Image 1 (cartoon, rainbow, N blue to C red):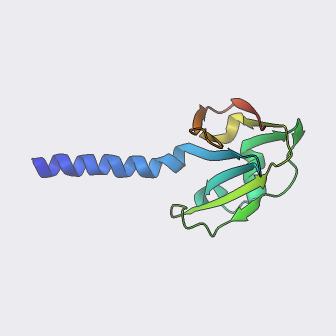
Image 2 (cartoon, rainbow, N blue to C red):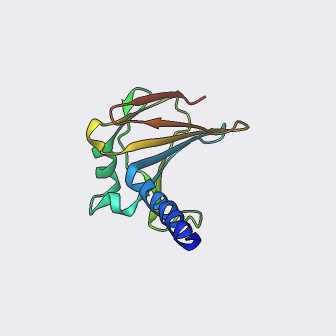
Length: 138
């Protein structure tokens, strides 16, 4: 009986760990005096043959200082801290005032948005499709 309960609990935990990337997009904005950075953690299955730019346009509207972010992200696949199957892409936001992010209605996933500022505990926001968030970067 104990083995059956342990197996069921282990199966639930493993299923939840795998479901996370299936249910959520993940974006972190790091706001530091020297160089602010918007980082996206993307599971490779989300790309499905699309470029990162196409993935971003299909799921998000990103505004910096009121204007659409119109450049390709910097892709960093080298980070040893990334879980298997993930890649990191991001944008430098230094010298900018405001960041606005809108999770499009048809994105199909929620968004886990993490805000990290120097010397302050990170803040997370859970956005549903159609929600938006605006941050002052200074």
